[in-house]
Image 1 (cartoon, rainbow, N blue to C red):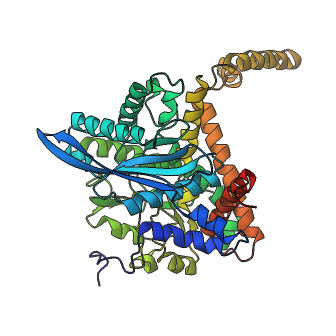
Image 2 (cartoon, one colour; image 1 turned 90 degrees about the vertical axis):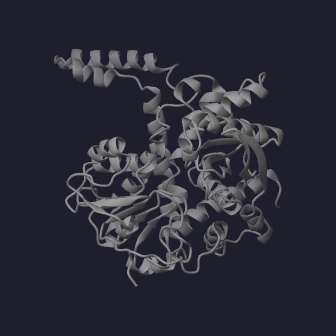
Image 3 (cartoon, rainbow, N blue to C red; image 1 turned 30 degrees about the vertical axis):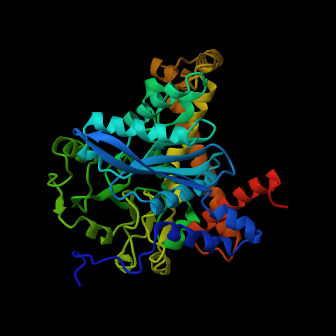
Length: 478
């Protein structure tokens, strides 16, 4: 059968069941009480709502959800997606992944997720605002939103605009709440957002891949050299995450040879210029027919092309047991949530493909959302208190060095050494530290436990152990 005409996915299981399959694999290697594991695994609460909204002069009933998977730490945290494919199973599965993701990168939140079952392209901006604000009101009424309760963020189909509407609606109902702006993250900068949030998931993805390709022992086991300079990369998805990941990977020296989008793909074995592709996409609305690249109509077949690193950064279940045996990448770096079906993973691992799991690799967004939340509840911009103080100290140090050496630095050199950190510098530094720390925690588990055979299982063990400690310390389990 031709790979260009994909039949229904074989042995497809519900997304939440797929997440729990990974959880159970890791849990079977641990000694925690069965009841504790069941509590960690279960979704604490889910709210399915249906509300009327006037659209194009008629009343339309909108279906939406908000799931809070774990309350072991509060608030819960997770994005809101607008998609016709949203359903309860997907929302619960994504909330579960958020629980484990936050634990892996040491962000003190429980996992949550929301979704509205619409195609945002079919609505005007005014109609989307009406839907978003009504959804927010529903969440307020049921106590499913608040800076100490549940803090949404952007996801597929949403962005800073929708988050600003949510924040404004919440403030209208909670006017006396001093921390009201912390009810949602991913907001525009003037509305309490934080610099660096837009690029955060893509930048975090880059940091995670960088740690892996600079891991000599790991690269040796795959037959690869360390570093990016000889690495070829194919990326699925050229939205916010895919574009920024491609940009940072290219800047580090990697060669992006393929990009896959919903309407096709482009490929050039000698490499693509990411900024040129971005400009072409912005101008034409598509990556297709980019000059200097081959356009492939059946875009997902490019998942099967030879490369060193495959980055699926679109939607879940893109690699299944239908196409897993044809994947030729040495490393799969999961930029999206759940891009590999649980039924396909054994085939990939048997081929000695390294899977860098989503619950670690795309956690950059929630890390920087955490920083935005901290900014909102502290009511001060990062760097405001100490930037000038650091610059004065650095200026004195430079002056001392010049006096002792008898040599003068150029103005460019002085400015580089004297400069105090801006908010974005601190955010990016915190993100980098979070991703590096989490990587080494995961790898220590993988390397120290002979019964752990893959990185995803190690990441789940890291998450489960941290959540279990929270429950033990709260006294819920003896």
